[in-house]
Image (cartoon, rainbow, N blue to C red; front, top):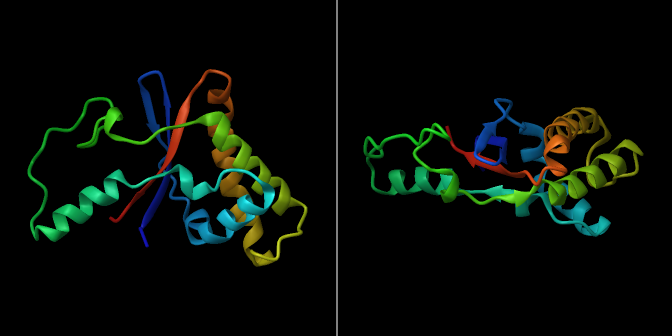
Length: 147
């Protein structure tokens, strides 16, 4: 399982990656996906971009650190915006809102009630980041990475 799960947004060419690791969403991803399936919305895992994970895995298989490649000026990473998978913010909002509303009602048998408050906090953080982008045609993904 990856070590990092981060929300990344894109509006035009403005690339923003939230510094907060969404550890509870990552830990409950299978349950969130099942919840999304039962609610009739896209699974959260459909919005995960594994590009950085694949890059790390390739370096590991070669048993050498990645070559000193130039970092992209827009992303600050080796990968450019075009190298990453993007999804409409509106599509993500539907899934995140459905999960948050369902969990707030306290009716989920998939997630331990003790975990719900921190999971809701992370879901609301994502919603607050995506909401301004929704009307403007912004995009997003969840970035996974081993650090």
